Structure formats: structure tokens, C-alpha cells
Image (tube, rainbow, N blue to C red; front, side):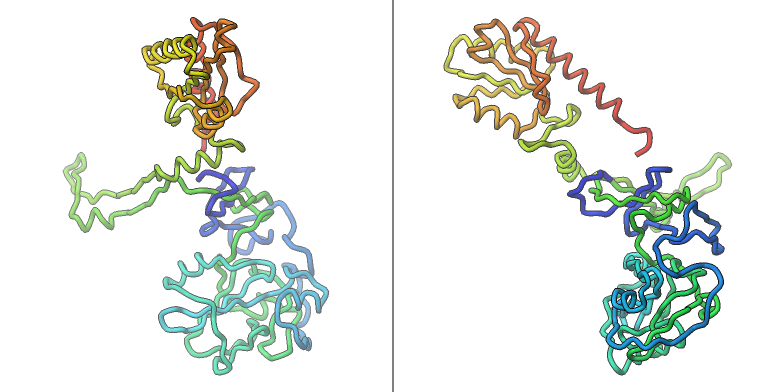
Length: 390
């Protein structure tokens, strides 16, 4: 993945330990008590409010006329959304049966995780009177849904108490919900989206960040699905036959170029890294109608080619503004300029794309060595920036 604000995917990262995952698969710890998960964290529960993992109070009904959303419930009871248990209802595409998912009120459902668990596609539910579900007041206590309803609990609720939830009755909610006491048969799984500031599932620190990214490569573990179907086998050193395990590795060449442009550009155009630039040097011949300037530019072009340098030679009869603007748009990393002014000074101008302070004037006889030196420096800088872990 390449991190860029223009990315199509959300990437969850932990700068402390290097954990990374796309949003569809990312995990997150929502509170610190170890509820049989074998994981702990270094901070108190995320989200302010009355929810806790300690002792609980009684389960009490509260009349809440006109309160249908988590935000309205939190305002009505003067609590944080994280102190509520919300229900999100879907229907399976195959048979329209209902799926009721309970999770902490401040979190969002990760539909990719939910679909993966169910093994079939879903869509937001249309709740009818015949279903027996009270939209806006659905809760986990004494829930009566139609036959075939799937009821699921997100891991963010595990071990919590003191929550507010729907009472499965129009205009009523419950306070003091204790998941251990009131929903003893609940099985908790991961269905919620990770969020910025969440606790890392690997190192246990509250350090998760979310960035946008572009997928430029992928790896798929195929197992023996295809090798077995093709009757592919190999023989080990003992003469025994085995079915090989396959993997699939891909790089998106087209989107890789677009990704580089996103990562390396300025207001004037791309700044190609020397490793993938279409040319290494952009030779600009200013005032090509001047025979002496043209001769100097031709000599430079021939010398660079003999030295094995990839050169784009621009000898068009256009203004300096047009030529330099086009050079910026092309983004070639090294620029060499021959012009009447430079010719009078007995030199040429060498610069790097995107770094105006790098411009230097060199004698013509030193220009090729100067170009080769800049190319070498750019390549070395790239090698230094390659991280040990990607």
C-alpha cells in the first residue's frame, strides 16, 4: 500500500509496533479488561461515559418518547454514546431473513467482516410491523424477532455494564444493561470498524491511526485449491508425493505510476524518481534558431548518449516559459539548459526537478560528469530511503 490522501482504501496503522491492515480486516481493542481474549492494553476504556467492566446496577426501564437514534438517546440520558448499546439491522440477500447486530453505540459496523462471517451478502433492513422489531428501540434483552433472525454481538460489548439500550417497546429504553448478567449466552465476535486512537491488538497501546492508501501490490494465499484440481504434485527427498501450496503475487503496474505521481509531485507536475523516470535528463535548447546555442546543445546531447544517459532533447522554437512549463509537466528528474545567456558565460545550467536551489552553472566540458554525478546521487538517495519493513 502507498499512503496518500488520494487513496481509495482506509489503512489502519500502529506507529508503535508497525501493525497495519486495511479497514476491512483491521482489528482494534475497545476496552482494557482481558475478557478471555488474552490481550490487554495500557489505557482506560476508550470513550467517556458510565459504561464500565465493574459492578452493575439494576436494569431499569426508562420512558423515552421520540428518541430513536443513539445521539438522541445519549442527549436524553446525559451520557456518552459509548455508554449505549445500539442495534444495527440487516437482511440477507438470499432469503431476506433479519440479522440484528449489537455493538457499542459510538462504533460503526464493518460490513466486510459481517459479510465474511455470515458467508453471504446483506443489505440494510426494511423493518416492517410484521417483523415484531421496534425500529429505534431494539435491544438485546427479551428480543423477539421473526423466525430465522440471526442475533450477533460485537466484541466491543464484552464484559461491559451500565449501558443504555432499547427495550423492544415503542418509546422505551433500558438503563443498567450488564452484558454478563442480562445476556449470558452472548457470543462475541469482531464486527466493528477500527478507529483512530483505538488500542492496537498487537502491542496494546492506544496508538492506532487511519490513513488513506492506494493498493499497488497484493498477495493471495491460494493453498492447494488450484494445485490439487490440476493434479500437480512434487516428490520429496524420501520419494513421497505432495500437493504444493500456491501463492499469487501481483503488482499493478498502471496504478503504480499513478501512485508515484500522487506521492511525488508539486503544483507544476510530477517529480519522477530516477528509478522509473521515462528519461534521466531533460536537455532544453533555448533559442534553437541560434546556431551556436544549437551546436552546444547538439554536442551535449551526443556526449550524454555516448555516456549511456537517457536524454529527452527539446529543441523546439518556443518561449522559455513554455519550454520550462512543459519540462515541469514531464517531471524528468535532471534538467540541463543551453541558452544564449549561458553560452556567453561559457557554461550550461544544471538543476533538479522540484528543487530550484539545486541549480548550478557548469562549464560545458564538465556538464556530462555533473549530470552523471547527479544521477548517481539520486539513485543513492533512493536506496537510503527504502525502509527495512514495508
